[in-house]
Length: 445
Image (cartoon, rainbow, N blue to C red; front, side, top):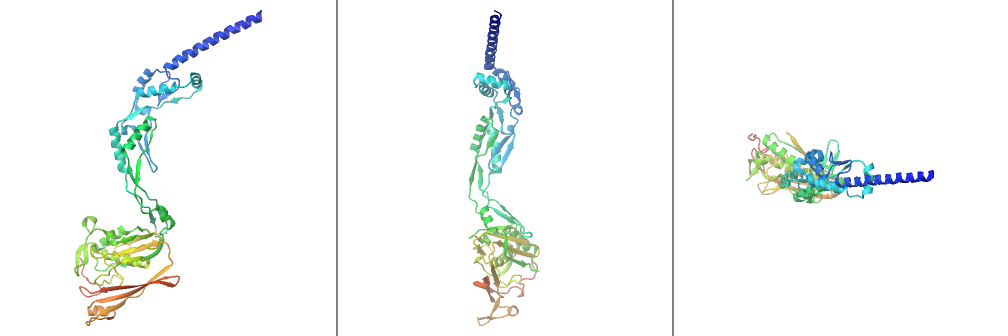
């Protein structure tokens, strides 16, 4: 009897417990339907146990920095740019945020959700954001000014003193697509994501690629040549030479590429930094903008010829200048004479320059060719009164004050064998004081 009573008592207790538990679960179920579960957060704002209306009210009292403490990070394959949300006019939507968070918190099976709530860690729900498009567009337009760029060729920096070098990778042209980036801001903010991809249009194919320079780095000196200024040279002439030399320094020429010195130098204008110095014009020496360019042409011609590059166009001065190698000078002036040569080595070459207050040097770097280039001494021929050119010395030429010509042989050898010979002919006359230097008086300063 006692056993039956005990069993009956236990059954009653169990039934009451089940009813109580069921009631608690039912109460919890009703509560969960109306309020946020425990450990529910939006940003740093705790909305646990709040109804939707209460949560909206609490959210309205909060600052954006409490709810969305992150910066907006604009990214692409090359860079990342961080901005504060307020810079873009970003603001939060309280009602939309709570509606979304509440649907997420109550979207699970109740019993599964009950288990998770008993053991769960804090859960942060996404913030629904929007932004002032006009303000964001202004910011993206400013960003475009930093990003938009033309294509950039690969380049090489060579330290001649150590032989060390560094190759920089080419870059394609870039243009930030404003409307598409604005759309990305909207899309990623809707997802609660603070990382926004920049939409960039890449264009323009760089002429020089890093791979080209890596394969055959132009770091081996294959020629060099130096000329010195004369005692008659003015600061203006030296200024022009140094200016042009700075533009030519670090010039990269790819296989088959041609350099025109006239095109490289450009227009002789004061705005570009040129000053007046003597040039040959109309058969006389007169001060004009750009005087001194011929020393650039002469020095570069000799460096290119010693490197056995393909000389396309070269013309000697009409006057003899003793600061230049006789028979191996090159006059340059836009509209009248140009010096051109081509890189026919099959590999990249690099031109380095040094211009001081007393000398000008060009060095050409490339891939070793095992070539040896030699110039013969100039053979001089004086024009006599009978109209015949006959061999003479430079002293005889100067004493006679007559026109003359020179012939030079340029010989190219490889492994001791002659592989090329060239005849270089030049024609001159004397000028001014009829001395080695055609004009001794100093130019105006």
